[in-house]
Image (cartoon, rainbow, N blue to C red):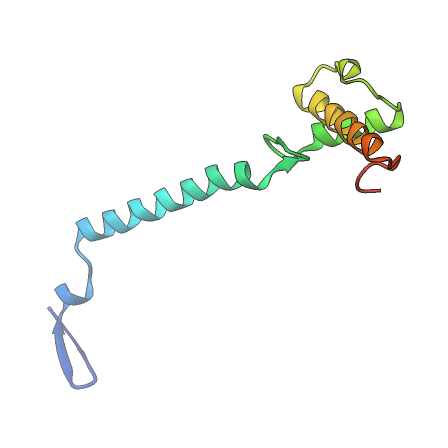
Length: 109
């Protein structure tokens, strides 16, 4: 079978990729999408140096709670969630660093 265009006749085998080539292209596309999906969230999401698993909401909640309760000791960061505790600890670390530098306002305010 031939395909004719623009005064040129080409065999269809040139125009249609072989099954193996299609399979390789499909496999490469799937591998690329998988790599982007798996790697990107791990790289993009962190909260003041602590890695987040999804959206950092646990870290934000812990930080906010520590700020609202004027937490100054990391041993008081003993919630039910590791991310909550890390957010609380991040607040304590920031306030300790700012106290040492002579600044009483937590970073980001």
